[in-house]
Length: 552
Image 1 (cartoon, rainbow, N blue to C red):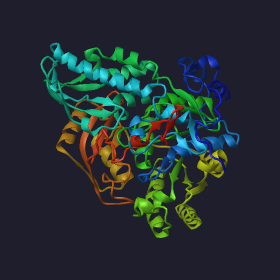
Image 2: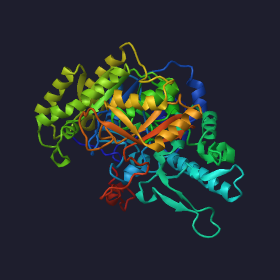
Image 3: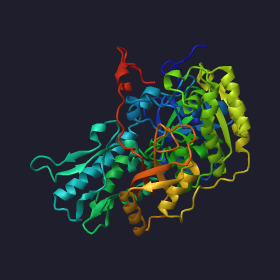
Image 4: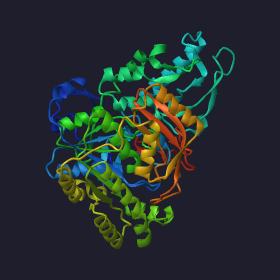
């Protein structure tokens, strides 16, 4: 078979793609021939239509090379269209951090990718840059407020708003600002990656520009000398932030390699943020299609739990089915096989690693969402391994299908699509894992015990102090956003498979009042990743024809 890379594929104009989705050209704000933003007026036109069925694609805990969740999301949307179902995908925007770091691009590959891939992976329509600018504007105005007399009485030692950039740079985790004469107060500060910014979460959870403005108002930037919260609105920063975000809040329309419409908008990580694309984009897609295939980052212990307990709770969404992406490689990795040996047949490790998948399937049952297993096929998979995985899924009571969308596009996922359609027709019994009236401590412990299967939680003194502050501020009704390693159910990346009777260490709790959730940082997780020993950036270049090489 001849494979087409993204730049070799013949793309349709975005006007034609929009027309296939029932979107008139007047509702497109064009970014060249193949990208467009969708107008605010389009929502007013479609908002009263019935919703399509929402399909969540999640995964087992991945191996360091990934599991193919985005690939499967794209391929499944193509497969559903292949079966005559009007389908759209709703995805997150890639961050430059992974593109230049360990993961590379995030637009799928082979015959299941979104186009134009290089543009989407790099600067796209500028949304993430706008979020970075708005975040850092607020940071600059905080220091400026202090410099010019500090009328609000911000305690410089209790400023919680850091700076942000969309790049992995461990050297910026902890810094000192204000050095030198006339440059403001010298104080400790730091950077986070933009995907962990509360403004990213706010944009992804907002319903419209008015909702965005109100959420930005509520951002807690620090505390005054009486230990009372100081919000962004109190230093007159919000209107200018809205100016920077007024275009970024509009969802983006692109296409798959087979011409399936894709709304791609927002890009929070799931290990340090809530890991879901925008509410605006998802709701728009649900009004335009009969089936909407979306994803949540990393494994179901992170992305799916947050998709259900945060995004669905806040946006009033009800998923019809879930797809759990697994690979033979990931099973063997969770069964103890090292990365260099993942291509070698190992049925005993595969069976051991399946305990990880079994736990994810059990967890999805707790949310009342029917689940189908997608076995993302690799050329190194042996028939014996594939047969063993299917048998293990059947023994666990789960429908499973081999997905060959990388090699065959929509045609390679027809069996998966058919099983997803059947699952989505089942009566919905969707429910949240915990109720709002629980304390933050109880919510964290519920996630740890029910989803991770830990025996308990050890809270640092700092975390306990912040949780007490949450109670005093009347914000204990908010959901929790767990920040944790994606590779394990625990807070240690090396504890693979399905461990039990472990403790989770909560080192810090942060209040994201604008986003409307409480972040619990576990283990040694940081919100500014570092580059690996050999970053993907080392293999990235532009050839003499202006083509980007190495961004996969």
